[in-house]
Image (cartoon, rainbow, N blue to C red; front, side, top):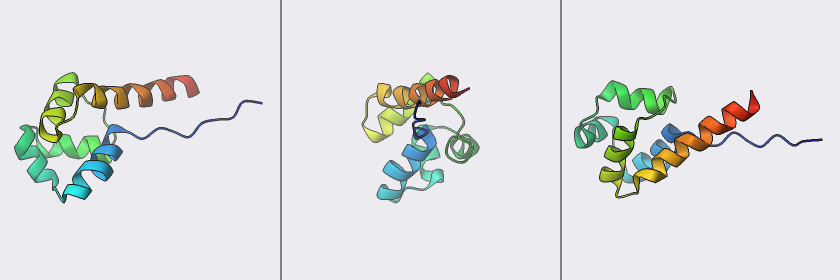
Length: 85
């Protein structure tokens, strides 16, 4: 019997829980810092929209992370959904 692994966190969940909340940063402030629209950031966080490579680069610049961090989060989540369906 195969055990189903838990769904991995989305980019939006990690962005919100591990970066925005601890830094007390609003979506508006993130929009200002990245140049992304407020509605786009909201879609990433609330609706779990996938991010583009350009968006990964912008997030990496703001949060001093590697762009691969964001891309890998995206890929792991996408792979999990493909594997489960």
